[in-house]
Image: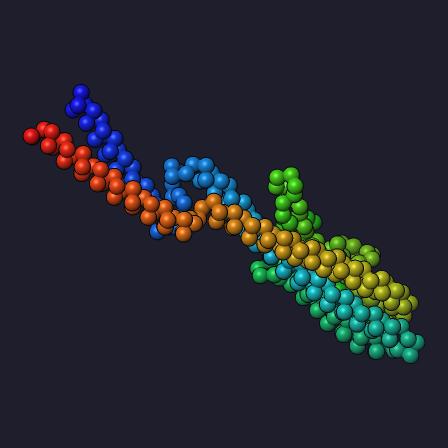
Length: 312
């Protein structure tokens, strides 16, 4: 009985000694890595929470990146449409001058050349890129939205070749888990500027300017006078479209501020879940070292007593 009891005691001390070594190793590893766990087996519940937080962080960062790109596109589109508006103002001034009775056919032919240059500037602006993507092509961002069909034979005849759909970015999270609040970050160019090839009688800027250009070429004073009001309406319309784009861009900036704060909160939560409290870990390390020392001393004492009992 004495030997069995001694053997059991010895096993218990050895087990405690091994446990103290394992605890010491775990705390030392935590201090070295700065993390409370490295594998799921170390802390299954904390690992699951950490994975959830990291997934949310990845999604949030992707939304932030897309929103940054979208806001930049919207700001650039606002600038482009604003510059088109300035060219329309210039065109209106030209129309007012050319509607005057004192203007001759020669004056109007010269004005026609100026109007062609204005047209070219408008199309160059409408074909602006953000990076490698066209701004006003809808979702067909790899294709220039507008092109002159026959600059010499049919000046002012411009066709739209983008898509009729727009691209969106996600603005963030709704109270219901993760429902996307979407914001359009591309534009269908023909909805803003029109298509003077397919809709020559349209009321958008390109058809209106094409008719004005033809009136200058044909010395049609009545048509030139009519163009003044048509261009004026488009100045207001384009200004409104630029304002809408600016409103979208500011809304995305507000979203970015909110998401940045959310990202910080997620990082803080992840730190609480994963990171080791170093002062506490050092204190725990010292405690485990003391326990190991006591366990080692006890093991040595029992071993000595056992040897004495066996060989005395």
